[in-house]
Image (spheres, rainbow, N blue to C red):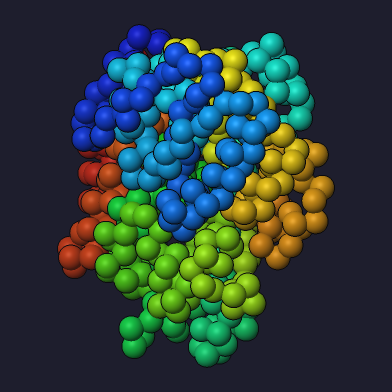
Length: 437
C-alpha cells in the first residue's frame, strides 16, 4: 500500500506528544559519542529475558571490538519501554548511536528526521541493498524514500501448540481455522488449564494480532490516502473476534489481560496453556526449559483454513530493523557496526540464537533455517504475510488502538460485556487521538 507521508514538522510534534502522553522514560543520557572508539547501542529484548540477550550479544560485540577497536556499550531495552525511549530520544537528541527498532515503527521514526537515511551510498558501505530480501526491505520506511533502517531479524507469526496437552484432549492435529481453534481451546480450558495464551497489555502484540484479523475481515485501519480508518465494520469485527477469545469463548485466562512481556510464553512452556500465537518463539521456549519435541508449530489460523494473500493473510511481516541516529558523532563507527551485524556470518549466528529468519539472502542457505522451528515461518513470510501500513502515524496507531484493545481485555477480565457497540466506541476514541494532517 502506497501511503503519503505527513509533513515532518507535524509528525515530530506528534511524536513528542505521544512520548509524553504514554509516560515514556528518558534516554540513558550517554548520547552520541565524541570518541571514535566507542558506540552506544540499544538492543531490543529478543530472548526470554534481558540477561539472555546479553549472553547472546556480548560475545559478538566483543568480537566487533577486537576486529575494529570500537567498544560497544550495550543496553537491552524491554519492549514495554522501547518505543517511548526512542521517541524521547528523537525529540531530545540524547539517544544512542545505534538502536534496534520494531520494523513497524520505521515510517514514524523516519518522519521525525532523527534517523540516518540509508541511501545508495550508505547501503554501499554495508555491501549493497540487494543483499536483503524484498519482504524485509518493505518494512524499512515509506515507499519511494530512502529507508530509515536496515533489516536485522525477520520474523512471522505462527501457532505453537503443546503436543501432550493436545493428545490428552483427544486433538489429533493443530487447528487451521479460528472456529477449530476455539473448539480445541474449549476442550482444553478446564481444571486450571487454558486453550490459548495472550498478552492483553502488550500494545505492539495487540496491534499485530488485530492487524492480521483486520486483513481477514478486509480492513486496513488506514485509507489509501493514509487517513485513520479504525471504525470500519471489518476493523470492529476483527477486534471483537480477538477479545472474544477471552470474553465470549473463554479459552484465554482472564489474568492474561495484564500480561505485557512474554508471560504467555512462560505459561505455555510450563504447560498452563496449550497454544500461543507468537512470532519466532522456539529459542524462547528452549531458554524456558521446554524441549523441542514437546511443541509443534503450524500456520496461524485464517477464516477459511488456507493461508495466502488478501483475506487469507495470517501474519504481519514481523522483524527488527537496525537504525543509526543522524546526530551520532561516530557515524563511521556506527555504519561499521551495522555492516558487522548484517554480515553473512553474524546473521547466521544471531538469527540461530533467536530462532528468527535472516533478512540477508546469503545467510538463509544455512540448514538451521529449514528446521521445524523455521520452515513454517519462512513459508509464511513468502506467501501469506503482509506489512503493516508504512505511514508516519504508525506509532500513534499502535498506542491508540493497542490501548483500546488493552482496555477491552480489561473489560472482559472483569466480566463487563464486550459488544460491537463498545468495541466501536473504543475505536472512535482511538481515532480521535490521532494527529490531523
